[in-house]
Amino acid sequence: MAMLASGDNSTPDATPRPSYYAYALYSRAFGDKMVAAESSDLAVKVYASRFSGGEVGLIIVNENDKNQTVTFDLAGFTPKGKLMGWVLTGKSLNEKQVSWNGTVGPLGGGGPFPIDPIKAYRGTFKTDKPLQLPIQARSVSGIILY
Image (cartoon, rainbow, N blue to C red; front, side, top):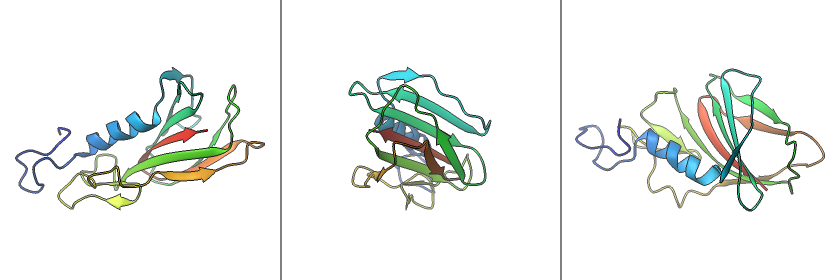
């Protein structure tokens, strides 16, 4: 599977494949410097980074078939309580058709395009408690904490 469809009768040429969206999510939510992160659930992978402006970027991969609530210890980071993010989902981890922030791609495979007009999720959180985020089943989430 390449980044863009080519010669596939079920999908128009140049339709972005799921791998395109993984790179798009990473380029938006992963900062300049990788920092240590770990998960207590083997089916939930967490990768953390810092942006040059001080924000924390998180990439969270939920391989579970069920939604998860993930609790974060943000040691060494004092957030302002704002976040933005993107979520890539499919019916399975190897799905050809994916959704970007809830917008579904074409039936033949891939995801919605272009993605820039699809707004990032935005939210706030309390900074005096551990951060808890709901993470969808079979998803990759990219989140920036401010």
